[in-house]
Image (cartoon, rainbow, N blue to C red; front, side, top):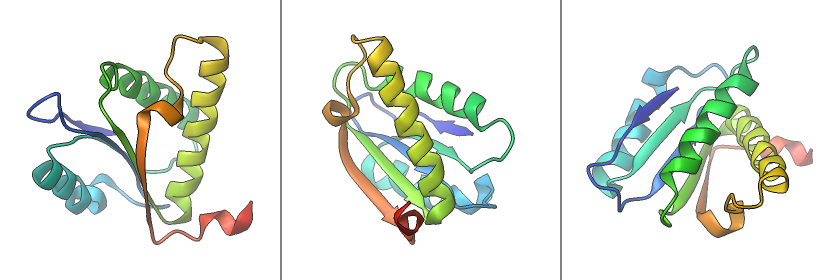
Length: 124
């Protein structure tokens, strides 16, 4: 996981889910574009087979802290591997909202989803 803070706390928070087999250097162009063009704080991660729950728990905790105060959240996923990781992240968020009602719902934070070359899990 890579976290790049925005120069100000006004820009959006972008959660970038890489494609299966991607490494952080593969995601560098998108990280740079979000940072340079939109002054966003970016959390980028590649899908992992082992330890994904731990990674998503850390990402969720950071995202939750970053969106306090109403910063917009953008989800950007690449290919089906990124879609699967994003789906798991959203399930985690939903479960946490059910347990801790003071956490903002995803519908109150999310302003945009970017699907980058994804088949959306073939309808699954």
